Length: 215
Ligand SMILES: O=C(O)c1cccc(C(=O)CC[C@H]2O[C@@H](n3cnc4c(=O)[nH]cnc43)[C@H](O)[C@@H]2O)c1
Image 1 (cartoon, rainbow, N blue to C red):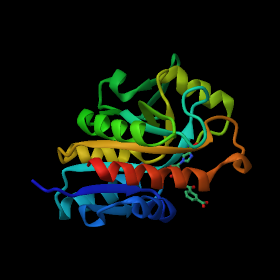
Image 2: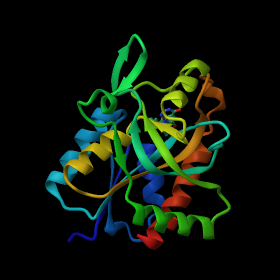
Image 3: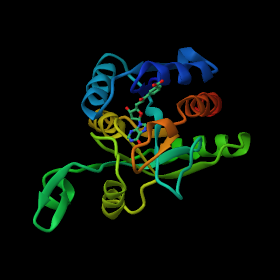
């Protein structure tokens, strides 16, 4: 079995933040696969078709749900959920799972979660949370959408745009997967001036340093 880990980010700045923290870079392949679930799935599938990996990680900055994950915190996924994959009906949104023609959920690898969680909790002051991370094709920009997403997935901690794409490709190839997000902004009314991207990228580098000590 391969000993390498594939890490997929959306953009180059996230890729660099991860790579800057890695202790033994040759044990990892870090790619920026593009924004959104389709680009992320395509990039992950292409990487998995040409090499074998023991684990796939989707990593980057993300939105945190207020009261669950604050700016600069780290969230590790327990489940990766495409929150907008389904149908609108007269009774409201129904996921593909409820409608019976697919799944919008991938369970993250429990052993990898535990290893990363222990490494981060014992060695950094950064708060680390474990919970579902949702994937959306459109970044949430209103309180109404944030409420609707929490109605659909009450236990969500964070939001991103790539997790489910990466997870779907990894699951298809039977490779364990998880998602890690450093919180750059709050999920809710859009306020780009309040995004803390440099701080989130720094938290990502620290997390990458620590995870590369245990994976
Ligand atoms: O402008 C920059 O310097 C810069 C540096 C690093 C990353 C970015 C991005 O815009 C990354 C986009 C990426 O971030 C995720 N993200 C962040 N916040 C949210 C959110 O509230 N809801 C959904 N996704 C979010 C997402 O995965 C994007 O692909 C810019």
